[in-house]
Amino acid sequence: MIALIDYGAGNLTSVRKGFAAAGANLFTPADPSELTASNAIVVPGVGHFGATAALDGAWTAAIRRAIRLGTPLLGICLGMQWLFEGSDEAPGVSGLGAIAGFCSRLPRDESGALKVPHVGWNSLYAPRRSRLLDGIEDGSQVYFTHSYAAPVTAESVATCTHGLTFAAAVEDGHIFGVQFHPEKSGDAGLAILRNFLEVCA
Image 1 (cartoon, rainbow, N blue to C red):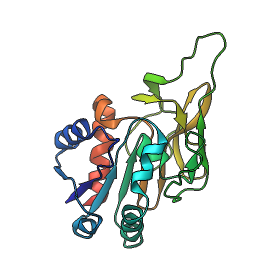
Image 2 (image 1 turned 30 degrees about the horizontal axis):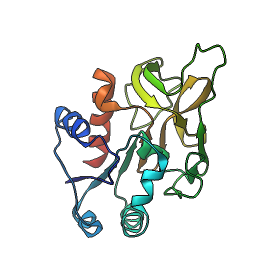
Image 3 (image 1 turned 180 degrees about the horizontal axis):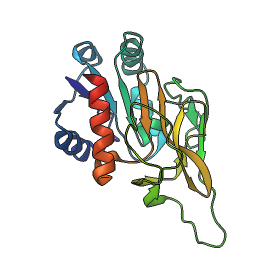
Image 4 (image 1 turned 180 degrees about the vertical axis):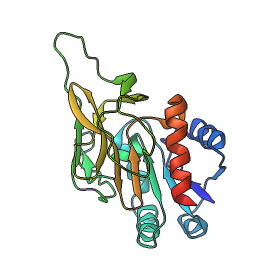
């Protein structure tokens, strides 16, 4: 059972469809206590980092407890940013803190050549050997939509460049995150979701 966390900022329908295409059905827990029955957790999200404040308290405690017990966790887009300590987008809102660092706004290009938000297909660069990106080639195209991004850290297993180079995917033990939307990223995204399911198995 894979828990899909609904905190009011997720594109839950498309994530469910993506996982269904990869061969898995998700359930949406109504209470943090239900996470004890899950063998994986997915935190999706689009929009403002401030929305993640809804996870403060019982949800964060339950997710941290699950992580300590070895439950795989996947953060998607805003959900990946939440894995970090916080974001300049909402300075008063804490992230999960599973990965050190803070998310920041993508730089504006005065020429107008690079637009923010970063919306559309872009390349994954230098994917490291990882369970999440197994079989994903350098330069693979995936779909992004975001204005803020996480820094490149030791946990980064792939990067992307849009004004600056940022972490496109992270992996630390059984904690995973992708800034892009695998459920909207064609064959590459489907392969990544299947890789996550392999970890869950």
